[in-house]
Length: 296
Image (cartoon, rainbow, N blue to C red; front, side, top):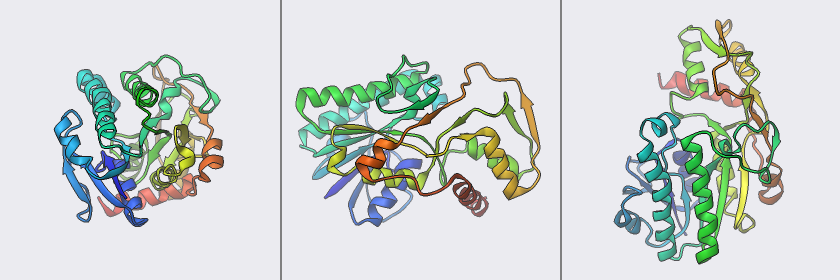
């Protein structure tokens, strides 16, 4: 079985590739950037090139579609590129999958689509109108897969990721910024009271959740894959204090647009996929700090 991972050289994609290879699958990476390891087939290509995609889809049975403009800052600074890659790129992937009679496409979506919902949200929670261009394109991707299934019968699985952290994460992500500031003994800025939070998920747990989604029980399903702890900004700082000792904190007024965050229900993933995260936040943060120290 050949499994194609679009965006397989990125943060999440590279860890998914690691896990797939570890479990004995034949893996092919479709990305503009070379994978971080040599023992995987790489098709250098662009989502906006149908010719590139058709080269990549030969003999493929399952597709993990992770390639996207995922940095919200790039989405705002280059909106046309964001819409083209995330929407038209996904349409091109669907057309290639249909042409090559792929068994199923597994989409990397995001819990950001729940917007400003508070309390507990599940896959049944109504999706509000998006407040960010990036979120709008992720909602669009989900609807493309669902309507394509209705028109052409191509099976899908939509995975709504919580906020991932861990080795190889982008340096402009909150946890990465906080860790490096702690290492340099620089003050960490907290906006508001610090009780806003997210259901962070360690990248290894997220990769395992993706593997679990190969199950036939995930066919034509939408599933949250997130951490089972709601981690506030204050909690992150306190965990860093356990590692580094005293940490200076600078408090600033709340930023416009900030929201408290929601608790993401993963009950469906537990029941349907027999999956749940194994790495507690305190352990995952320590592992990430060790990684940064080794690569500084």
